[in-house]
Image: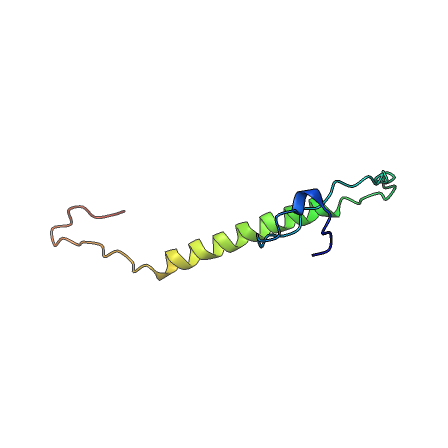
Length: 83
């Protein structure tokens, strides 16, 4: 144990982690960043969206092409002929 005299940790027979004391340090307020961000992030989002769309289209085309063609029913008399 690091702090035997800590009032929050007086119970020695309980195997718990040490309770941290509240700090008295003044935290430094960091300055505002002056770095200018380019708009490459927006372009990359557009590119990924179009890439996803292309992948979806390819999958749909594969699905369409993998299905067997439907058989056209023919009649001897010529009824229900598709023009």
